[in-house]
Image 1 (cartoon, rainbow, N blue to C red):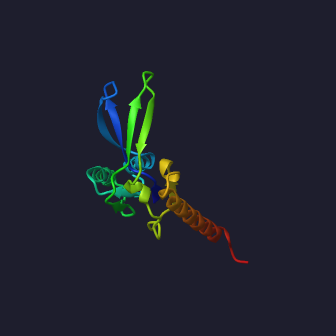
Image 2 (cartoon, rainbow, N blue to C red):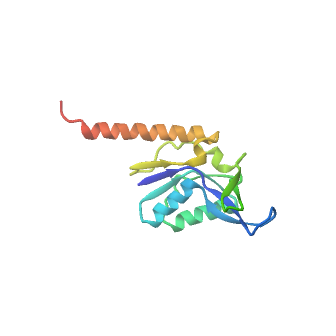
Image 3 (cartoon, rainbow, N blue to C red):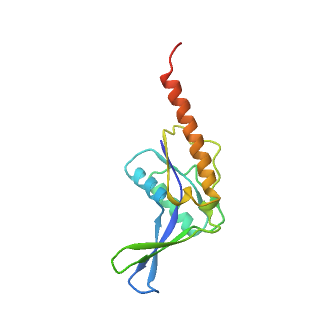
Amino acid sequence: MIVVAGEALIDLVPQGTGALATLTPALGGGPYNTAVALGRLGSPVAFCSRVSRDAFGEALLERLRDTGVDVTPVQRGAEPTTLAVATVGEDGSAAYSFYVEGTADRLFAAPAALPPGTRAVSFGTCSLVLEPGASAYEELMRDAAGRACSRRWTRTSGPG
């Protein structure tokens, strides 16, 4: 199993031009999209993050489940979902403003254990630099690396 750890958020994408163009919500976040893609490809995958109990959080979890992603490691919180508001320049390039203060995914806590059968852990994007969650992802990363080193040592070591 591949465990993908990091944010799940809502991209608010402008439909049309102008400062007050209508914004359409889209499910997103680099790690979230990675988990969805792996699930669609039929890979055993789990998502490890903290997701809001609001309507956006429910939609994020529904897509994960629909694509075969194990959501058992997902933590839930009453805090709102992170928003990324996109603006599109005249040249077609996108820029984002992130609304992260006090959101659910920022309050991620490192789990006591990874799901059984975890063979790899993928970490991603904003979650790795935005506290307080970044420290919890670092703790999870160190734990996963330590377990990988232990398994490697066991596999390669033989009798005296």
